[in-house]
Image: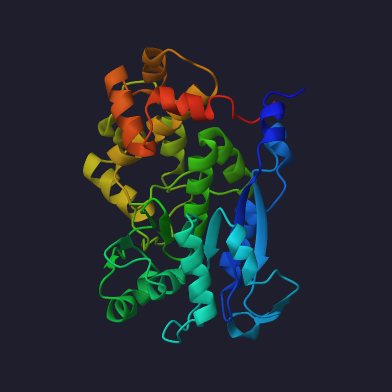
Length: 333
């Protein structure tokens, strides 16, 4: 019997319900389907991770710009079984949502479901009253409109996603993938999230605090991106790498490297290096290493105290709690 199969046989998959309202963007619905709905044979005994349901307020729902009409989805009653409710975005945000849709969102939140919005889906959560006094984000293009309509929300328009615990909001369409992978990582650990991101051919993890709008001019010469130096650093995370080391490898000054990281990744070299080391520490713990000092050394975090502090800040868990939750959840094989 594969590792963890008896545990999974007794465990009901986390139920994700996507609320597809009139005029919603197909891309965000597709993101939810890709992240939460597809079979994942590459994960062995961990398949399925989630049980996905699409629901609509009407039998036939016309998508944004009338690209197509969705039919055959479940009704709004499916929201009442959701462990996570995903609300994608639509461009006509000045048009109020129907009371039936807003009440379904409120009902799910009231009984403890995790509520997630993609792109301008944050408008629906704000209309439902879930965001007053809380942090949230949405697509930068609609930030001004959002502030006018919902002044009580603490909008953060320059980040990829915001995690308020029971309510999470993502910025533009690509940021929906970032938030989706973040949720997989939070639910199932770094190894599983990395496997899902490889299947999607998408970056394994971009921190929610990174800038959502990043200028990316076309390179003047081939292979002038940061990819080579990032790959080089990822293979040496256990070494005492510094920003100066990365700059030397890229054959630029530290100041130039800093500007390039900001332009291409929306973060700093030091923040990227730290995030990579924390992610590596998570994977090492998931693979069964129980000695905290060894995990700290192999991930480049140095000391057990630093590992505990960084892991707690990134995941909300101590190393022992993280091991208890994710230690037997790495993909099979």
